[in-house]
Amino acid sequence: MRNLIALAYFLFALLGCDTGGSTLIARATSNGHDTLHARTRVHAGIGRFECIASDSGRCHYALFARECAPRQPDCRELAFERFSMKVGDSREIVGLPMALDLCVGQHEHPATSGPDCKSSQPDTALAASIEAAR
Image (cartoon, rainbow, N blue to C red; front, top):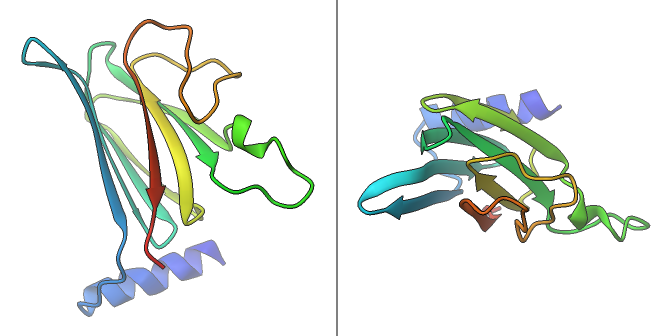
């Protein structure tokens, strides 16, 4: 079903229909040098994640649901998706919620990290919220 929805939005884009979306650019610099630069675009439940620059050579992502389903009061504390990619790589994920929180950093976030990106690492870890237009 997710792939069918993605295909429909792709066809709408080919026809010139814009259905909205959100773009987030996470960027941290030190003395004019990008220590972390990542771009995220969420459009109709499809997320495109790009790792542009990172001093560690990788961008580490953790995605969190903004709203919990009934009987899941702690879902915001646990990432529903974690991944990392090399600088220059990109990844698409289909079936994302319309509202989500994400953390992106140079080093992997600990399992206890919540959407506020608290990390034991002293490096850059950036938190952001995305709410795609419906």
